[in-house]
Length: 80
Image (cartoon, rainbow, N blue to C red):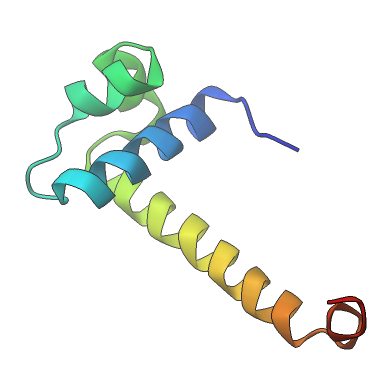
């Protein structure tokens, strides 16, 4: 299921920018434009560029841990 909340759109846009451009070169306006919203709304939800970075790091880590767990799952090995 896809998360289509404003926060998720901002998070996903931030992940794309951080991965492509690096944290230092990414600005809130670029994140906002990619997310299809204003920089003010990004600030409303996250306050600063540091907060989306933390949220992005946590989100990506959860995905990686889940994939590792899925890869170790006995059920997955039987069906793969």
